[in-house]
Image 1 (cartoon, rainbow, N blue to C red):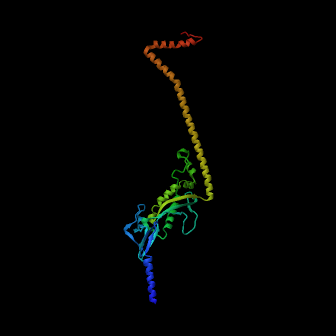
Image 2: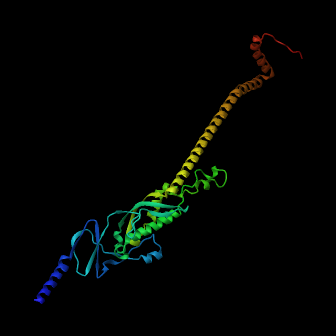
Image 3: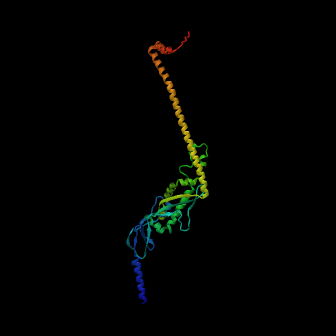
Length: 324
């Protein structure tokens, strides 16, 4: 009786283990890998390569390519084989995600030693070409990627400088050596807020190697807010107001100067035209007298002058003749 019960139990276990759990399916948003006795099935001797990593890093992250099972089924596996399924769709996660603690923002220090809060999201997906790193490389790949991302982000914020320049006007337009530096002092948070797209692009470029490191590819970085403490925010508002006033004054001064220069140029042009109008008849008369003298000699010139005086003599009321 006991032997029969044992055999029935063993048969039930074999049926459940071999037949019922031997078949599995893979959903359209999943990929699967099979491990036999803990060793994943590999694609020969092919290894993961990445040109963005140094030789030292490539030795550290040298992992094999695995045989990937695509959507479909049912597939069969032996009892000593284990199937690991991974979702490969693009997902979004908040920057504040941390399985070890609860936080509402990521604190970071700027180059002005101001503590600011950073918020946003990142979009990621599991790298189908490197499932080994995701499934067998580390215990929590997403936690490693988030730690790597936040470390790079804090380093960038601590050294960020506005690439378009720190001053309202060029150095050549301000007399004195310390003008631009004084205008830009203490406004790194403003520079970060104005250049969020550049910061996001930088983070995406720096995190392109996460697919090789941890098996997770960064799709996009969406840093949306830089929030300093309230007292710092009030001080920055005052700085922004002052800078806007300075920029407005500079624009007004430039407009007035350009208007004065334009008016001066037009006045000079008008005076030049008036002078040319007054000189033109004299030049024409000189050329006429020169041609008369050249063609008829002094006698013709004297006759021309005498005939020219006749209308004047006709209008004169009194003529005074000076003797020699």
